[in-house]
Length: 606
Ligand SMILES: OC[C@H]1O[C@H](O[C@H]2O[C@H](CO)[C@@H](O)[C@H](O)[C@H]2O)[C@H](O)[C@@H](O)[C@@H]1O
Image (cartoon, rainbow, N blue to C red; front, side, top):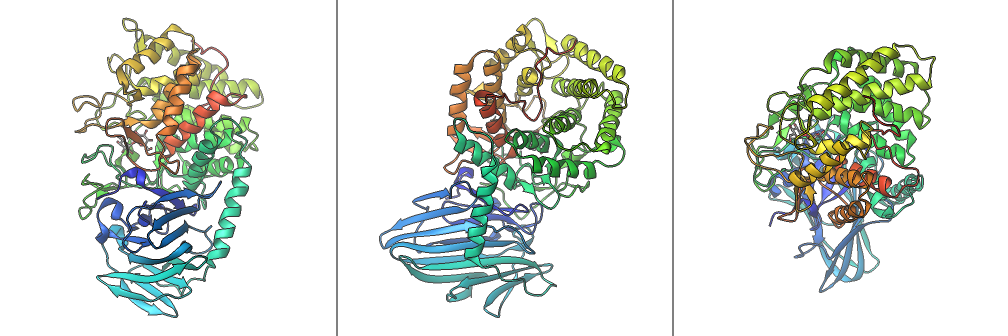
C-alpha cells in the first residue's frame, strides 16, 4: 500500500533533505540541493522511480521511531520474532559532498536485515551505470555519481537495476552505510566516518537548540518546528525553502500539486519572524543578506519567490513519467507563480526588516535604501489588483489582505522614521499613504451588512488571511469589525473546526478544478485571533488540537483533511510550522509575539 504523507520523517543537511518512511525506505531525495532533480522519487511514483530501503527481512512498517532529543537524527526500530533492530538515519553537516548515513544496530536477538537501493537520477527516470571501485559501489549517470560503502563491508550484489545487501546483526553489532553524491567528473569524494558524523550532528543540533529562548508549554513541539524550519534553510545562501518537496497533493487524485522547493519572500519572512522571536539572530542576518542579494536592482522587478541562491528563473513544467502521489498528477517542477504580482510581499519584507532591526541586527545603510525603493514602488502599485497571498491562478483582484499589507509597509516605515529622525525620506508621504490605504480598505473591503471584511473589494467571499488583521495592528482586536470578521471566517470557512483558506468551490476564485483540505497555518491564525479577541479558552483548545495533528515525529504538511484524517500538500511545510511557533508565542510567551508580520500596540491609523 502507498504510504500516507504523515508516514514520513525528515532528515537533512541544510542544503537538501530526504523523507524516510515508516518502512525504512527513503522515498524522496534531491541531490545536491533542495531544488535539484530527485534521485529517489518513489514518493511520487513507485519503487522503479528510486528509493533506498533498509529494514529487517520480511518486515513492513517499523514498531516505533523518534528523533533523538533536540536533533534531526532519526531512530527507526523494528521488533521481530528474531529480535529488535534499529536504523539511525542522518545527513551529516555538509563538507564537500552530501552524504546519507544509515547505521544499522542490533538491539536484541539476531536479526536478518536487507538493504535495497534503487538510484534513479533525473527525478526517477534514469537508471545509472553501476560498478565496483575500491570497496565502493559507484553509480554514474551523466553529471551525477553516487558512492555507496558499508562499514564493515557486507556482501552486496546487483539485481533488477538495484543494489542489494543482506546481513545479520546481533545485539551490540553495527553496520553503517554511507551514500555520497558527487559530480561524476570529479575524483572520488573524501570518506566520512559515520560514527563521527553521528556524534557531530547530535552535538551541532543540541548546541543550536540550546539557544532557543522559548520556555513555555509544548516546548518539545515548538523546538521540533524550529528544527524543521532550520532544516529548510539553505545554508550557503541563507535562503529558506517553503518545503523540501514538489507536488504532494492538496487533494488526493487532484491537480493542485505544486513545487515548493524555492524561497518565497512571504514564507521566508515569516520563518525569519519565528526564528527571531525564539532568539535566532544569525539565521535572520543570513536571510537578510540573501534578500539584499536576491532583490538587487529595480524594485519594480521584485519577484514573489526566488531560487535558493536568488535565481530569478523558475520555469514550470510537468514530469510525464511520474504518476504522482497516489495518482495525483501532474507532477510539477518549477512554479509559474514566480511571475505573479502579490503586493503583500512588500509589507512582509518591510515588516521583517523592521523586526530584525528591533531585534538588534546591525543596521546596514543599503537596507534603508532598499526599504525606501520598495516603498516608492508600492506607492505607485498598491491601487492595482493582484493575485494575492494564495497565488490564485484566476483573474487579478483587489485582495483585502494585499491592501492591508500595503498599510503594514507604510505603517512600519512611518514608525521607523519616527523612531530614527535621522533617516532620509518623506515621512509625510508615507503617513498619507497609510491613511489612504486604511480608509479605502475600511470603505471598499468591508461589508457592513454582514459585519465582516471580505476577500476582495465588493465580493461576498471570505478569506482566512483576514484573521491577521488584529495581529498586524490594522485595527484593534476589540473593534466590532474585527470581531465580526473572526466570527464570519469561523462560521463560513471552518470544516470540523479547521480553517480553509477560502471557498475553493471550482466556480470560485482560484480557477482550478477540485477542492483542497484545511490550510494548517490558517487554523493557527484562528487560534491567535480568538485569543486576541478575548476567547482564550477556545484558542487554547484549538492550539491543543492542532498540535495533535502533527505526525508521530512532530511534522506538519501544508493542509489537513479532517474527514479522512490525513495530512495533505507539501511536507513538511514551513508555513504550518511557523504557525505552530507563532501561536505558542502568542498564547504562552510573556513578552508577547509580534509574529513574522509584526504587530502593533496602538490602534491602526485611519
Ligand atoms: O493553491 C494555489 C497556489 O498554491 C501554492 O501556493 C501556496 O504555497 C506557497 C508556498 O508555501 C505560499 O506562499 C502561498 O501562499 C500558497 O498559496 C503554489 O505555489 C502556487 O503556485 C499555487 O498557485
